[in-house]
Image (tube, rainbow, N blue to C red; front, side):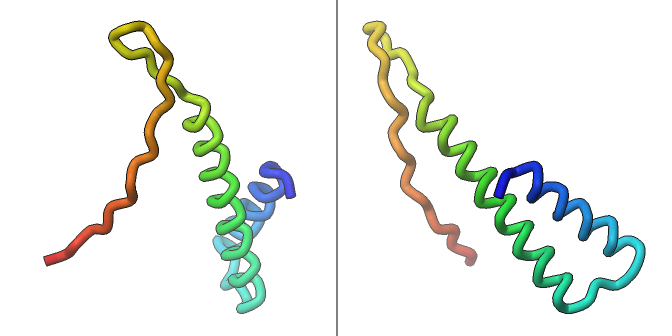
Length: 75
């Protein structure tokens, strides 16, 4: 599904929720489209970042290293 179609659905359910309470099925659909939107958005951003290269002091192009995921510890 294309991003514009997903955005249309997200906007549809957002507008509908302002008019009335969503049914259980509509809430599930809204969650599905929100998740699809976030997945595609993250994928696009990752694609852009994967193509980014930096130039070091010697003028050589270097790919960015992937950062390890850190877990937050709450005390």
